[in-house]
Image 1 (cartoon, rainbow, N blue to C red):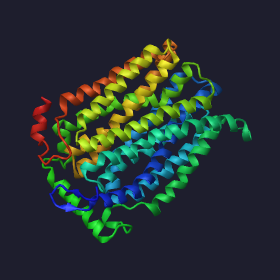
Image 2 (cartoon, helix red, strand yellow):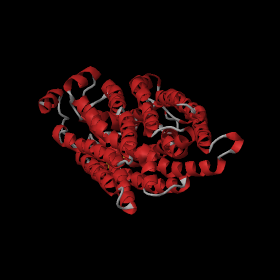
Image 3 (spheres, rainbow, N blue to C red):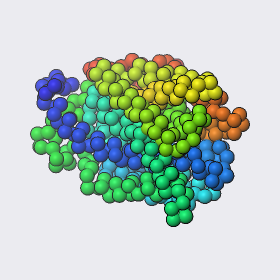
Image 4 (cartoon, rainbow, N blue to C red):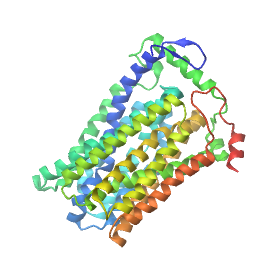
Length: 451
């Protein structure tokens, strides 16, 4: 379409303008998220030889993988509030350079204490990046266009798995023993360095707000400003106060829902390669390629679910259906683990598709009820508290594997947690459509629905 009907009812040639914004921002943000995701989860691949080289148990690995989220939790809300105050460029530059340097320092993680400390520090530095981008995109896109933007951005985590798996396997096989370092140590050096360099590019490339964008014409900047203002005014009842949003109970419901989703996502991220190894694949490069195919399917699912969500204006059922697929597939992987290698891999792929496809459309829901400071702090609070599941799930799976010798029981537990996300959505989140002109539920309405 060459033009769209904006919320106020006036014709405006907005499609070409938003396409221009999309092409300017999203590819670069996806590159940053790809680098961040690779540096966060490459531990899942290096674990294939690292734990054996260092003599660590599965529980030691699981604790180290998960402790990242403690640092993430403590610093995420302050980081997002700081972004709202000083802008995206300064915030994202600090975050990107910091996590890159910490990732490189993982080469020295030869004891559990150093391993835990550096994983915690990685979480501290990365805190604020993901919710910061979610907030940043709301400065550029109205509600009816955000699911596509969110889905495209978040799909980078899946495509990071497509790139990161084979790359980590190749580095581990090729560089093992070079300069006296193990292959897993070279993974941290090679994959951390681009993040440091990208941090400096952030300063020169990103623009904080539409009115500062010199790459847009004056007319284009004004059109975006008017459309965003109309979008904001069209939905009455959004909560601007962080404190009031907490009192209403709505925030805690979103935290619980996202906690269940992240439990599954973290389990798949940090133990997906181990699951592939469990069914008989031993070569790191082969495991990397299998995880690449799995994550490619997940990325496609995120984009398609986001596109369909935007077109329908509905995100409640899009999220609930996706997490249900993820939960059923996780349980199937647990059942098939000792029965069928092919069946287990298919179940793993469907679990990744379902779980990852739920994430971008989930974020449409809190953005429908929150605005201003409540949106800045609320998105960060939801993400940081829910990501504590990223601490618990990997540790649980590691402990279960040490105790039982396989991952089946752990997968059943995580599947049970994930299905709770669908139940919570259908119970507590009222139906709404982002292209509707009816007011959002007021804080009183929300309180009544939580009783």
